[in-house]
Image (cartoon, rainbow, N blue to C red; front, side, top):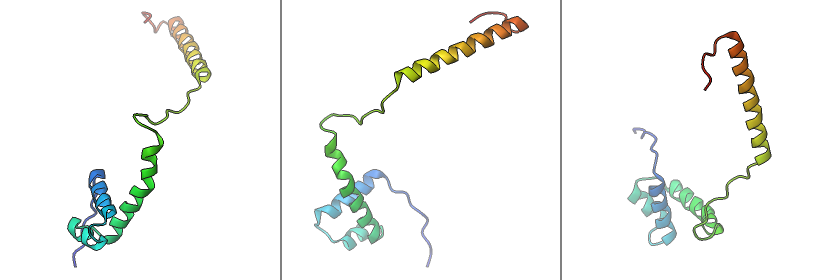
Length: 103
């Protein structure tokens, strides 16, 4: 008996198999034979589709996933900190004679 190398299936293929399993027109064993995969894999993909189907209807039409909140004050503080560091390093290089022209 030869071992088959590990295969990576695309998301589209997984969705196709899971939808076919949900339709119920064929048994899981028939689908596994048709798509040349293991029976447990069909069941796993079907369960994943059912678990993820709720997320499709949560957001509403045309809504994008919510972006994480950005703390503007901390970003402005970081910009100020980096500006001070750049100014300090620029003046130190200028005093050392290593900086010939300002940007």
